[in-house]
Length: 266
Image 1 (cartoon, rainbow, N blue to C red):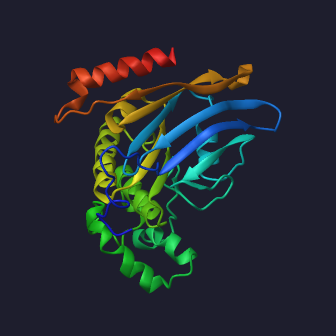
Image 2 (cartoon, helix red, strand yellow):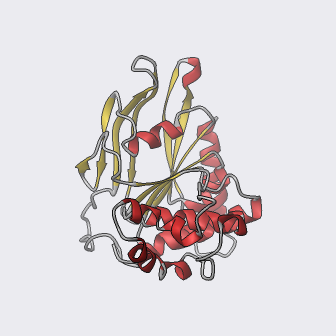
């Protein structure tokens, strides 16, 4: 996918676009016996950012592992652009909570790592990555070491590395939680803008309701207590009516969505 390109042809009026990512009836278990997530349906449309919100220990990361093909569900399917990819890793990009930049490699070589591991020559990988540094807010950082970057800049580098994996669907597990509050707000606004510009589809896990409402067009609210024998399920889906405002967090639409999510979390 070229930078700035949208995914696929335009959809005719009244037609239903095939989801970029979908989970259908996903049921998951830690050990094959004790169910922790039951009958979960999730869809992410092409170019859409959705969030999955739930309390700690409710199985959010376990769902992400299944969507990434890292675990096989007890029941249900994972579809990528309509293709069944259940239990098949490497089909979507996955960004973890920690940036995991290698301290012994310069930033350009860190972000090029997926390309090199895929067999591309280092020089060719650098040539492909270099034009993207400015778009990702990293101009001038190419030859710096990870220790020379702030937390926010390290997350940008980690996202560029994720983008270079080549998938147009990205899963993100609490990607901003290690940042301070001001940096977190800045980086998540930047992420939403870049994802929109590049036409990426993303599912973001977060326990922060404000973060979810500020980023997503739809929020999946997970409820349950697997440790107490109550499998988690999708308690509801909250659409976010985004309005053009420099202070969206102060609008009635923002507050209405936040109240709905909080009510579903209980």
